[in-house]
Image 1 (tube, rainbow, N blue to C red):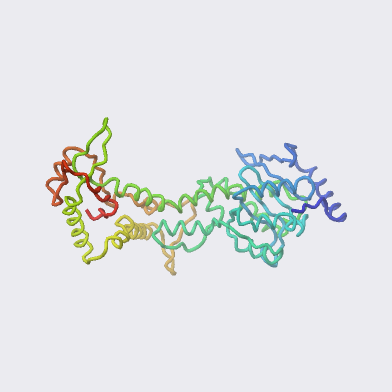
Image 2: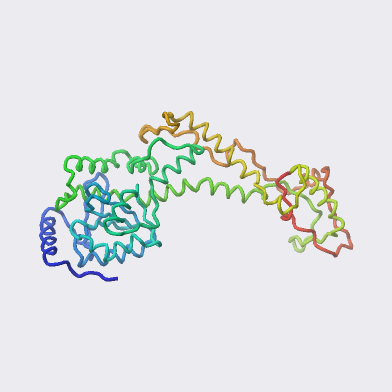
Length: 408
């Protein structure tokens, strides 16, 4: 990777002059080689960020640091961000650092010397809130093709759809709403986005002003500061049904009533593998097989039956129906049949959020510990119990995993 040591003289002079002006306005504390800057304008919060407006000293180390990350938060600022707009700032957040790349001063050379490589790296996950205009701007102006993107706005809609049983909201959520809704960020803490919006409304070209106001740079850093945490919370919510169903799978057979196959022999308290004559097992397998045919109502081979959708997975449809019913009661519906979500500050938690796969609405198999009482109950069942014969030294009894017991 080629890192430029400097810009053309004209650009360098302009950058140097701007740096001198900014140094007079900012309280800069040199913490390391990057020139770490600390600000504490926000209540109970200290924000660290690094402004990169020239190539020597800070640009190269920043690119190398970002290149080592597996996930980064990305946001941009400028005038009418799109293919016809003006990109002025790119914010990139790692786990422990925030970088503000001043594209207004660095120019397109910044992409040729590292930013393009990072944004197109398929091994680095880019977390962005609403990547549509960002992608349009980067592709048409700088030939940067964003890859491996996690869009928190898309994830928020998908999570809402899962929560409401497949229904969709009437509109997408802003970053402020997502932070309040999913990270439980106080509304007062999310006002930094409104500050930026008000500044742009008063002066549409505010992001081209140099030096940038400290408060504006702070808000630019805060915009990417929470993206990685937001992505983590959204992923947990999106995977909730999956992880719950896997937990149900783990206990699917484990919690079934015990089927006694005879008395086990013990060596020093450890049960020894029991050998049972296959001829004595035929009655058991025949009875089980007849039950499978009766339940399925049509004869089929055992391998095909075992691949049918299990009872536990079929109940996903029940859960979705319950969630839809809860959502219809909790949200208003617009003329297009979409759910109207209020601002998170006034949003009530719908009952649908509590609809998980192992709720009391769904019957579960109770775990039964092997005991003498269970053995006596099993003796009254249609399936004959197997008792090992004294001269039994033949084939092992076929394992139970070859038979689906979910029908009992």
